Image 1 (spheres, rainbow, N blue to C red):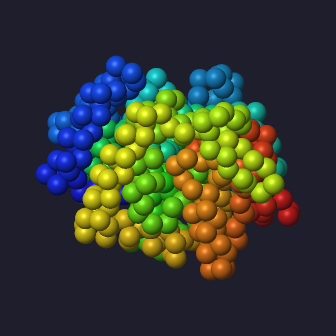
Image 2 (image 1 turned 180 degrees about the vertical axis):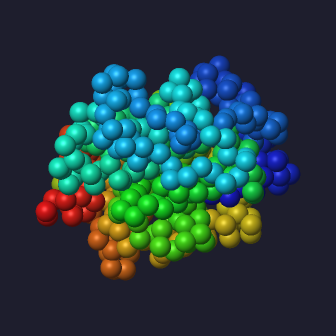
Length: 410
């Protein structure tokens, strides 16, 4: 989530570390997750080891066709040529970029390419929309703590409609051990380079689908790379879908909530659906409807308090604040001219709905085509699971109206 500049090793956070350590001891017996948190680098000042992850890229020297197609399908020249279009335009120039085939059995890959389902392919080549989809890549940028398996259901939805998909995630350990110019920035630059390679052929386009502020900031960093490499790349972005974001300023409370949710996972109040009321819940009015917002447990409240103080210090460090401001300013005032879709919820405990709505209004005033849908009761980055019909309807309408405009008209 932005440039942390090696902040997890800085002496300035000693007080926060001590406070958190005492909290983790008090609550480790009550909530098992706290015993795991005590092993994290920003708590113990022991650096979390970053896994040795290779960045998979399609092997452009081979005919990569999924085995599920069978020999008869693989032998079709049309299908072979179509699936070749999913590969990168050229091999990486640097010897540091290892070219390998994708191995679905590897769970910790940062990057995975998903091909369209065979049933979506128009073998005759007569469908304009099939051709348009085959030349479009949807780039899914995961939320803090997400893994490839968490993005699979989104990738499957897009591939079932004929799109190519890239899923991109960071291990939480890599975010925690962030350093300027380190592996995180190198991974983003590598992804941006490969996307630029894909766009070298005329007619190919991108759609970005981001999740939470982590995916949103990753999107901003990619836009930075595009601007520096070739401004024309910005015009090849056909749409941007923003799920559970953004907050347009470095807010310590938002960062604390995001990291708390990533650490606690299903134990976090951020994952709870606010559909029932209890005596201890807080009543919230949304339009004409009222729902009950559960309070976090004592342990989570303590964690949130410590993290908020921690990020209040970190986000005000000049090097961190300057880097984040650069990315956020680009996302606020330098986005490509493509249409935008914002999916959010009034019940989101990480990203305030008011922040999203304020950003939407600013984008509209800047002349962007913007759509938005408030899911009202669904938790952070959990809208698809809780209301799949509404979620997929929003995606389908957005893609039909803006991404597949040319083929729909013809």
